[in-house]
Image 1 (spheres, rainbow, N blue to C red):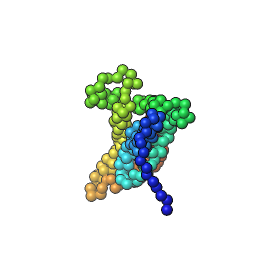
Image 2: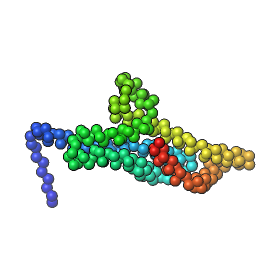
Image 3: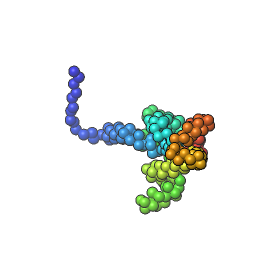
Length: 225
C-alpha cells in the first residue's frame, strides 16, 4: 500500500519562494472560479438566454434538454472567444511560460484583450450605475475603469441584449399562436388548447427556415459588431 507523510517546517522567508507560492495560490483560485468567470466575462450569458427563449417560444418545455443547450452554448463561446484567447496566449501566457516577462506583467497583458472585448459590448449607462453605487469618481479614460466593475457592467449589458433578442424571436411565434387561437375560436373549438395545435406549425416553421443555423449565425455575428 502506498504511504504518505506530512512534515511541518519553517515558513518560507525568501521573497522568490514566497512569490512563487502566492502565484500557485492565485492560479488555484482562478481555476476554482473558472466556471463563474466563463459565465460573466464571455459570450455565454447572451447565448444561453437566447436559447431558453427560443425553447419557450416553440412551446417545447424540455426539448432540447438543458444539458444540450448548455453544451452548445459552451462550444459557441469557445468559438467566439477564440481570437481573444489566442491574443492572451500570444501576448501573456507564452512569454510568461518562457520566462520573458514576470507574473504581474503577464496578468496585465492578459486582461487587455478581455477588457477590449467587454468594452465593445458594455453600455456606458450600465457602467455608470456601479460608479453611482460605489460613489467613485467617473473615469476619464477606459484604462481607469477597474476590471471587476467592467465585468459587472458587462453582465448587465449582456442580460439586456439577450432579453432583447429573445423578445424579437418570440414575436413570430406569438403571432402564430394568436392566429391559431382565433381560428379555433371561430370554429367553436374552445375546449382544444391552442398551444397544442400551434406547436407543430411552429416546429415546421422553425425547421423550414433552418432555425438553428440562422439563430447560431445571428448570435455569432452579434459579437462581431
